[in-house]
Image (cartoon, rainbow, N blue to C red; front, top):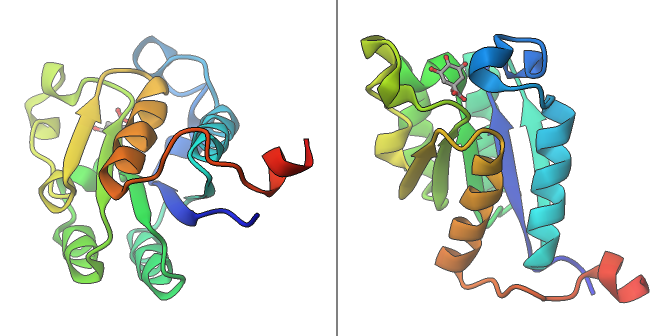
Length: 161
Ligand SMILES: O=C1C[C@@](O)(C(=O)O)C[C@@H](O)[C@@H]1O
């Protein structure tokens, strides 16, 4: 059975450096670890995770538009530093009307004041931060629940097993 739907997992600038970037803040897990966690968690709900990363604001906007064109059922976004600056990313999320959850690996509210405001959070139905990379798993569980995806739903991968 094909996946019940696809969620786009979008990571923004410098998140390709996870694992070596400020491990005291972001831990030692890599972006590959994040993407495997997302795929594994999504599969539990019969969903597929299409994971992308870009250091370019316009590319992230294009990916949000692509999610819409491909009829994605949800978006998980960690826009990195652009979370705090990009009205354009906010507007893209609002424009496509796909249920979105914002994730931050670190607790942005316990950090420098310039990280305390997020434009992308205002375009998401939920936002979570401070759980390390487990935040992506929690965000997918929340998104799946929001869209009515049920845990234990079989997909091709599980059906073959
Ligand atoms: O690049 C990042 C990572 C981050 O989004 C996080 O996941 O904790 C927090 C941002 O403030 C920062 O610019």
